[in-house]
Each structure stands twice: as C-alpha cells, then as structure tokens.
Image (cartoon, rainbow over all chains, first blue to last red; front, top):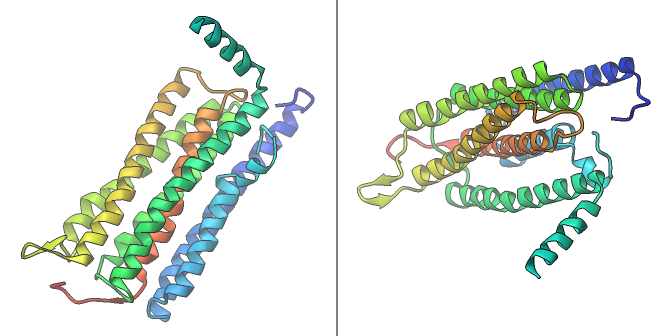
Length: 77
Length: 205
C-alpha cells in the first residue's frame, strides 16, 4: 500500500473490489444455470457446453485469480 | 566453507526486492497450476474418449447445487483475499471460514451423496466399468484437491487469527485462494462433462 493513498480512497477501492467479486459471482451462477438449460435444449451438445465452461473459467481466471498480475510487477491487484 | 556459502546465499536471497519476490512466488504457483491442469486435462480427455456422447444418469439437482456451492465458496475466498490486502481482519476471518464451510458442503454433496446414489459402480462382475471408473476417478481426484484446499485454508485461517497476515504480508492468503479458485475452474469443466454432455445411459451399465 502506498502511504499517499488516503483512507477514504482505500475504503472506496476495497468496496469496489468486494462489489466486483459479487458481480462476478452472479455472472458465474447465471452462466452455470444457463449451462444446465442449454444441455436440455441442445441434447447435451459438447461444443456449446464446453464453450460456456470456457467463458466461466475465463471469468474466474481474470477476476478471481488475477492472472494479469503475472504480467506486471504490481504488489496489488 | 559450507557456512560461508549458506551465508552468501542468504545475503543474495535478501537482495531480491519484496515486489520481485512476490512476482517470483506468483510465477511459481502458476507453473504448479499449469502442471496440475495437465493432469485434469488428461482425465477430461479420458472421459470424452471412453464415454463419447453418453453419460450416466446422475442426480441433476445435486450436480447443479454442488456447482453453485463451489462458486459461492470462490466468492468468499476472493473476499478474504481482498480483505487481508486492506487490513480488514474481521471480514477476512469470516470469509475464510465461509469458504471452508462451503468446501466441506461440496465434499459432503459429492462424496457423501453422489457417490452413494450414483447408478454406476467402478466394477461389474469383476470387470472394469468405464462409466463407474471415470465417474469415481474424476470426482475422487477433484474431491482430493478440494480436501487439500480446505486443509490449506484452515492453516491460513489459524495463522490469520494469530495476526500473521496483513496488507504488507498477504502472499500466503493469495496463494491459498488462487489454489482454491483453480479447483473451482477444474469443476467448471468437470460439471458439464459429468452431468450434462451426451445422452444418459440406462441403469445396468
């Protein structure tokens, strides 16, 4: 943490990250339920369901696992 | 001589800046996760090779429920990581406990319920049954990783309670949480592969 960051800004950044985590969770659950119904409509199409799984995985890797930190020297996400 | 070498190595180690060390830790963890993904990728390929466009008739409601439970656990794991990076110890501790609880619930759902109610067995009349073998291997290997994650998170929670982690020292939490998310990513692929893809086969397979 930089000492120049004010407590208010730190609090706002923390709240933003909490909120983003919740939005990602909602998106993941919606996609997973959509996955379930797509399986019924497409008679279990492997291509469609694996593409949906890839989207889900990409969301987790980007927003929860912070893969971008691998390509920077940041201490924060 | 050995002492001198060890001392020199220690001094060299201290030369690495905290930011650089964090970067190296992250790189090491990701390389480990990539090696793990080869294992799970191989298992997934086996499923498609052996089951093709068929699957056993598993409990759909249970499959969706355990998947949602694991996704919610990932949300709490992420919350714990953010909390410790901002010195919010109360939220960190609550979130890590929720993650552990949901992980145990997932295990209870898969190992405690799915394994008992699954319509297939690994062996039929002394011969290997591909439906049972793949189902139990995929869920078993994944459950083992979930169990490992629960143990690691419990250690992190205990250390966190003692004040070991804070905004300047959060790598332990970050590593445990990223591992937990990886286990989640694996299940995101396993869930459709086990429960949704292909036509259900009748009992007796």
